[in-house]
Length: 272
Ligand SMILES: [Ca+2]
Image 1 (tube, rainbow, N blue to C red):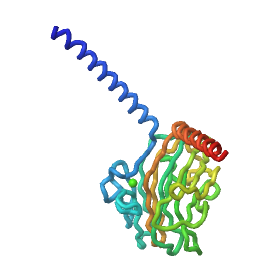
Image 2: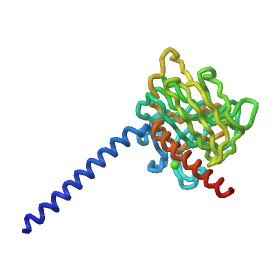
Image 3: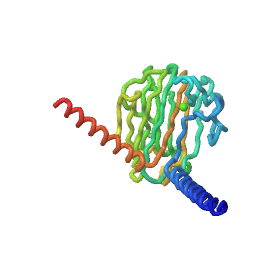
Image 4: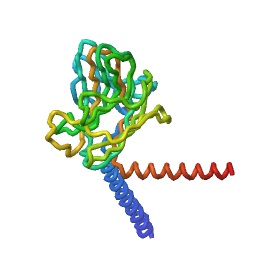
């Protein structure tokens, strides 16, 4: 009796275990497929970003570090510190999965300090590792003759001249940039947010082309954080980088949109 009583228990446990393992495997496989690149830097030790996890690059005479108490107190973020003696750029990059179809991305950007001699920029790029000058080029930038910083992009037609999106930005705070990418047409749309407040958007931005213009961009797979400092005195911040395939996020957006419609209907019913 004891033996026969043990068997059903053992077989139940075994099937539960097999079930859980199968679920776990399916879940991790799905996760591996849906995440291209994502980090909030929370599990990074503070200090030099380069050499940390999968980040490499060149910090020149400046530094690119993970720090806490940066804009958002207690939350790790990356800061590229100004060094007036370094003609830049200083950059750190990490590989994402190879991206060959539409996707969404998000990044928090910020700055502190003031404009100096030329056109300093903190840049966020998603590029093709075979052609690192090509792809998505966004950043916070000032312009010669002005003292304010703007959210800006460089595209195919203006590869070395950044175009602004929206008005002047405030220092010492994070702005969120959200984007959706049409990979086949090598274009993307972005929107700029101050917390939950929408500020500005721009659609149909072409991928910037680098020096190897004959090379088509067949994939995007490298994330860059850049301080392109040329005689400036500003530090730039980066946090909450998220690059994910479109279908998942699109499904989530549809969910939010339905919820909004539902809320509006409820409100109108209440008003009526
Ligand atoms: Ca963070």
